[in-house]
Amino acid sequence: MIAHIAGVVAEKFSGSVIVDVAGVGYEINVAVLDFDRVALGEEVKYYTYHHIREQSQELFGFLSLAAKKLFEMLITVQGVGPKAALAILGLGEAEQVRNAIANADSAFIAQASGVGKKTAESVIVKLSDKVGLPIVYKHASGVQTELNTSDEALEALIALGYTLQDATTALEGVDATLSTSERVREALKG
Picture 1 (cartoon, rainbow, N blue to C red):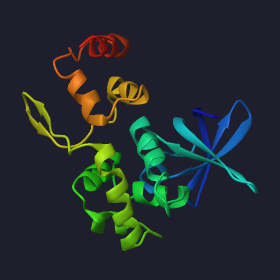
Picture 2 (picture 1 turned 135 degrees about the horizontal axis):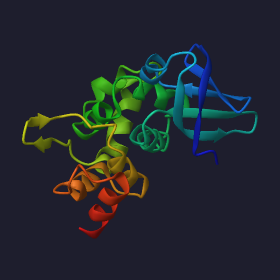
Picture 3 (picture 1 turned 180 degrees about the horizontal axis):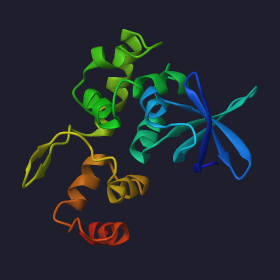
Picture 4 (picture 1 turned 120 degrees about the vertical axis):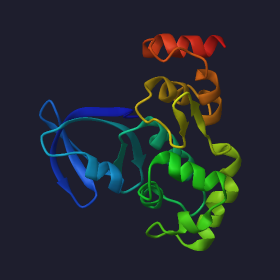
């Protein structure tokens, strides 16, 4: 299994990028938002899902680990393949999609290319209990309603199997100025 690929964006075309890693180009299918965020020649790191079928192998890449984990949940739903899951993730940030599922907003999910109303409802039924409740982050400066995708400690806890809600709860009260490994260690103690 290829867990991640880090290198330079060598080419971009129709929903995929080629990342050059030491002279080897990996073609990675990406969501629209991730496609728009990278430029040719830019250093990138994609968390990847290696999809193997009888006739082909494909890599699907995500700039955040939270998006990859949501992708993996989406493809467990009958009728949602990797391309449809990528289209659903292309609707917005991973946290927006997660909130739509948690709020049973099948109309939002059905906006994805190749995803009909019935499939969107299946996504809601199958995943609403797995994604948890919509999260509202409380900080002294106000309320943040979207996931801070640059929080590596949060993504590390999710990679360890925590749900988004459990990871967020575990990190509450942990000093944000600590290093990522120290924040994860403190969250695991609590």
